[in-house]
Length: 206
Image 1 (tube, rainbow, N blue to C red):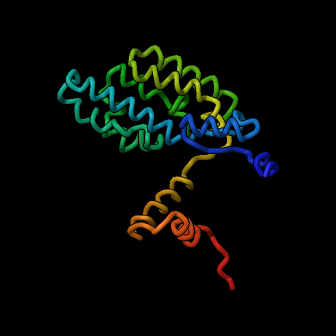
Image 2: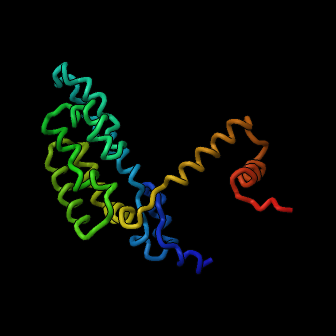
Image 3: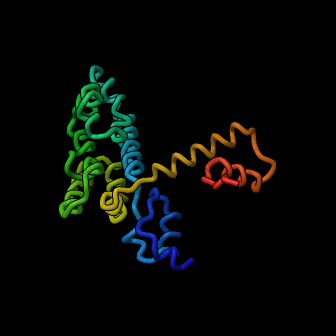
């Protein structure tokens, strides 16, 4: 068991403190191996954009409110879509104001660089974006920037190792669907057997 743990090269997860604590306890050199899934980073920043948008909607000109509303999930799109069809729909940002422009950053630094390959400049560019985000004057963004600074090691590891939670999230969705379709199971053991039967890649050649 110890040998298996030591052979783990990277561990992808979201930024849940419980997951991080468990990894630090059980995984040797955890800080060098923990990778925070870029989807969860983008999701956190989407929440910042959306909550800030809601609080400022009354101050946004009427003609700009539609594009501001469409910006809610902008961080969840790839950079090509952000600057392509989706970008045109949102006017390239949320409402065009300096505050929202700062929230969206750029493609070389910070969240805009999540889809880029890791290189020697990645850490510096992230630190520059975090410093900029703290100075924007948006309280929620400042709080998110502090969180990103604290978890930067895992964000950079995800860029370096090119890993994400995609496969695990997909399997979780399939397991939830299995439970729904079955209308429940008599006990946990039967549920475990069903999961292993459908998704355990068992060798059925007998």
